[in-house]
Each structure stands twice: as C-alpha cells, then as structure tokens.
Image (cartoon, rainbow, N blue to C red; front, side, top):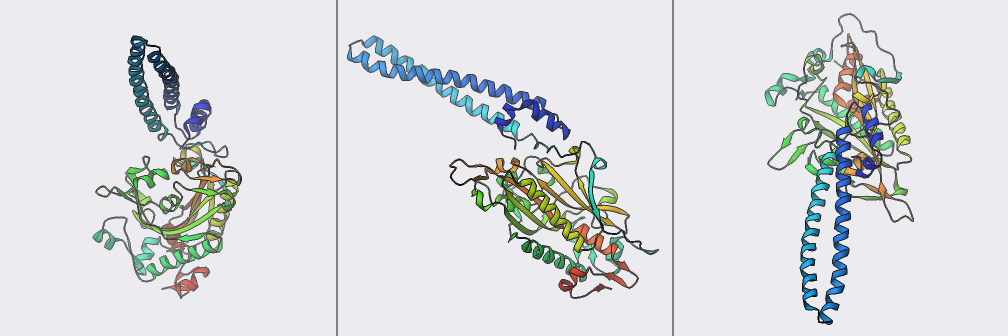
Length: 424
C-alpha cells in the first residue's frame, strides 16, 4: 500500500498517477490530508499539555516546601485536568490513525510511468511476439472436443463431484498436467529459484499482505469458521514467507518458486470465455516470486519476462507479450506484462501468465524490509511475481496447436516427462 507519508507529501502526484488506472483518488487524498492536519493540531495541543504538566510537576514540590499549600493543591488539580486531556488526545490519535489506515488500503498502487494509457484490454501494448501460428487442416477441433475424443478431461464428472469449473483429468490428460508441472519446476530451479511447497489455505493477514484483501474477497473461497481462504495463486503464501522479515541487501534478489492448485470463484464469468479449460474455479500453476532491491527491481522484472518467454518458446507455442494499460492493471501492480498463447482450435489468444512488479506496495503491507550493510535503518524491499506457467490454457493450446489426424503430438520438451511423443 502507499505510505501515508508519501500521500501527504505528494497529494497531486498520487491523484495524477492513479488517474492512469482510472481511479479517482481526489476525495480519499483530501480526507487523508484533513486527518493529517487534525492529527498535527492535536499533537501540538497534546505536547502543550505535556509541557505544562512537566512544569507543574516541578513547581508542586517547591510550593509544598515553601508552605504554599493552596497553590500546590490548585496545581495538582490542574494536572488532573491535563492528564484527562492527554488521555483524550491519545484516544483521538488512535481513532485518526485507524481512519487514515482504512482510507490507505482503498488506494491502488501507483502505475509505473511505463504503463500505457488506456481503459480496456484492446489498449494494451504488444511488445513482443514469436512462434508460428499453425495452419490446421479442415475439421480441426477446439480442446474440449479433443479432450472428449481422447478421453483426457471429463468436465461433466467434475460437475457431478463438485460443480462447473472443476474438471477431472484422466489418463494422458492427468499425465500432461504432471509433465507440465515437473517441467516448469525443473526449469525454475535451473534458473536459480528455490522450490517450496506452501499451504493452499491462508489466514486473513496473508491475504492482506499481498493485496487480495480487502480488494478481492469476493473472488476467493472463504472458510469462515476458521477464518481461512483458499489461495487464488501461490503468490500469496510464498510472498508471505517474508512477512515481518528484514533481509540483508547482499542476499537480494531472493528467488522462490512453487507449484500449487489455485482456487478462484470467478463470479460473473460466462460465454465463450468459460468453455472447456478457458476459465476454471480450480487449476494448477507454477509461480515464481522475487524479493528485489528497489534499485534493481525493474531489472528483475525484465529477467522474469525473459524467463517466462523461454518457457513458451520451448513448448513451441505461438505467443505474444503485452504491457498492460492502466485500466487493465491489477490493484497491487505498478507494471504488468501479460503472456498470451494462440488457441488454434478457437482462433484466439489465451492469457497464460502475468508478470508484475509491485514495487514497495506489497512490502509495505507485509512489513518486508531489507538492510544495507553498515546501515541500521531498514528500508522497504520490492516484490515481484509471475505465472510460470498457469496450466489450463497451456494445455488447451497444446491440444489444439499440436493436433494431427493421427493424434496429438507431444511437445519435444515434454516427451521425457510423458514417456510418449503422441497422444492417440
């Protein structure tokens, strides 16, 4: 979250930059400034009361020694009044701080100056592309028909067991899931990421730390009896490993990867976007997370983008990379790159990864700091994360792009994991 001091010192900058995200911050900023002024005025009054009390405390003893009992007692009565005023100011400070904190969490992260101006996905900027879009023969099918033909995924069985958006993977369908997970984890470890296996449920503090709460509670599955939430991505538990932690600058960047199932309510989704594997309530994903020095976080972001690009290239999938415009960005992000792969059976692009730099926005919530050698005062670190990769649409793209009359070819890099080179 944005620091209150930064908002107080740069009100017009905050309003101007958040307008790029189509967020009108003026009213909130004005409320914060008014609360700051009220707090400062109370502080002056409180300091005055304390100074007067200190002076009276010195005088009371002298007055008693000099036999001026009436004056001493009047001074004591005055200190009782001052104590009550100070107590009230202390209560007011807590109230004001809570009111400012409540406003603080409503404000999104400031977008980087690299963020394109725009409101919808059509305004996103394509910054790179690669691969060759296959020319499929007549009669080619979308992935949900291929999944049925080769008995790979049973969507109706998932509806029976749980509900829509919870498919059952079978046979080669389950094997390709496992193959992709292992391939992505092996690649991440080779790129210097430490593999961890996090919990799939988190507490409210963890959801707050990475910015899912209070912004996205409607998109998360909640276990109210225990106060726990099913994770929408491994970003949440992995980044929270570093909550309330001070790391040494010499150890940055810290690179972590994790596989997890992910759970999203996706309320309001409908139409072609939810067909087959296009949009699920439960899916698998490998995540990469970095804790970076503020001076080098954008260098880390470019490295992460290049790394995710290498994965789609190795899978042989046509892709494009988009820099998201202000209106299409997430609440916590300062700059986001989306990866899309071509869905040959559907004739459209499918998002498979978002790679984002949150700068100090999450770190401020997490109280995640770093310390330079010889400097006792720690500073806020920067956090980054990316999907590397989300499986459902990768599977959809592989099934559609690699379909042949003889069966579905297995991407060469997955053959050692699958134990076969074709699904038929």
